[in-house]
Length: 120
Length: 108
Image 1 (cartoon, each protein chain N blue to C red):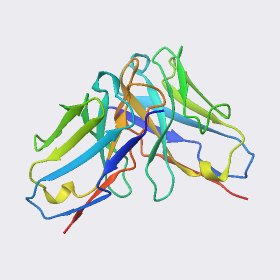
Image 2 (cartoon, chains in turn purple, yellow):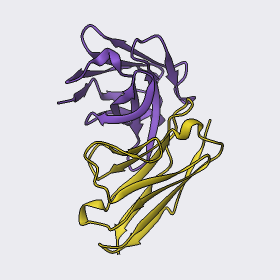
Image 3 (cartoon, rainbow over the protein chains, first blue to last red):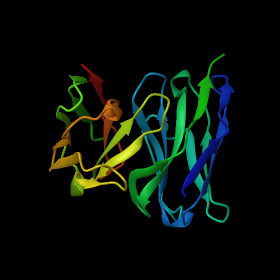
Image 4 (cartoon, each protein chain N blue to C red):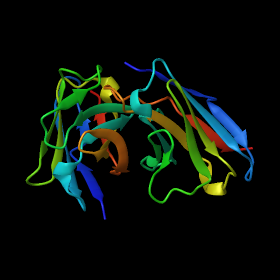
């Protein structure tokens, strides 16, 4: 059974940093692209960042490019999102999502999400 | 960046009726790399359709997808009570992998 469990969310001040983690199990982690998708309260879905199965290729939304860094540990089946220079508009539930293939970015499994709140 | 526009914003229908949801892209989606998701309150999204028309594992055949280029459609042939939810389209042909703003299917 595929499982994705996010952690690391919480309350942070504007300008601060946070690192999200996603522990994956139930599939061959290195064979699949992974992404982070966020959802602000009461709003729609926003793709944030993606990484290929090997980790060689990374992609970012314009809204986070230069502030967020995605990475993965294929030895321990963990996906990360390092978030720096956080802004109020980054407040959202952040979902970890499994891609449909090594370089395929539709999402067939999702975690339950972790809430990030940016506020003073 | 490819902008996806979903219509209508809200669809009010009764159980048993047919639902037709539209997703229009600002430019052609390469390879028909278009997916549809269903989201219920307090839950993570669920994949329904990928590749514009392929149903994901375990998705009932009352859900179907069609389209290519810039115009895509999700059809629910006969609405069941559990189908009332918000539906999002997403293109994964080119980064950034954008979502539409969503269509809410509500009970009339």
